[in-house]
Length: 328
Image (cartoon, rainbow, N blue to C red; front, side, top):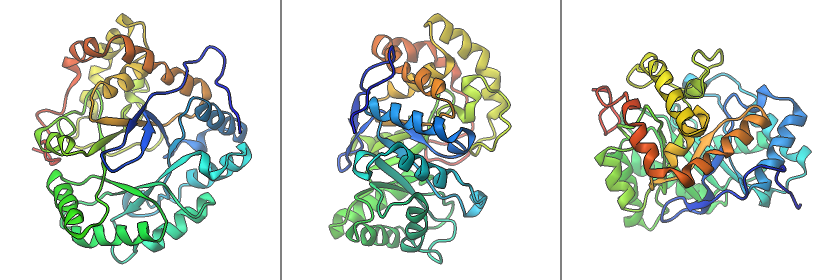
């Protein structure tokens, strides 16, 4: 299928490697949580086609059915149907799925994948994120169970979400000892406001060792784009700093205006100034929103150093979060 970008929009999106053991991916990726269910079927198809035309073939899609996400969301079902409506072949996009640890090992990875992949309408992902656990975890068992699914052809690379840096090290070292596939990226909350964990020393050492970052929640559920009080469910609030993030928005808006950009473009470009970031995930529920966010790449090209200097005062979690990922 040959696709062309919408006239007047930026060209192909640059690519970075998702960790030393991971694939090359576009620096922008589209997430699914409460996204595809907020647009019409035809708009979803148009957005997917335009994303692919720009070389953005990375889609983060999950089945939300466990722990705090036991909500029977339909975004994965809608995404799968939109891909079929768009006529996109499975080999033409990268699927990043989720494996949840809320009910693990009672609900194992093979069972989870069978359900989630069937809902999308495929038999494999390309990447998965293993995440959302707090407390004790048998890291070795997780690495072995992930390896079984890789051997079964369900996916080829994996990352983690809401793991401590120490547990990521354990997983990588055990995988090396056993000749298994190590986690190649960490999906971390990272934004203009939340920097303590992604930019802290524990993860910096992992990034120096070849791990990559997949930046998520970069718009804080829309707050950093100007929707200060979202009516939909948004991500967790580590450190209980969301009101402080809202308080920084006027400054963010002023800085964006100085760069002749939108706050959303500013937020996305900021994350990409960090060389550890391989890709930034965000949701878009309108094609105009998607096309606007694409222009963050122009900002990144022309003002990478100026952005970080101008946004030094928007960091608000330094006194609430330890770089290890725990609250102070």
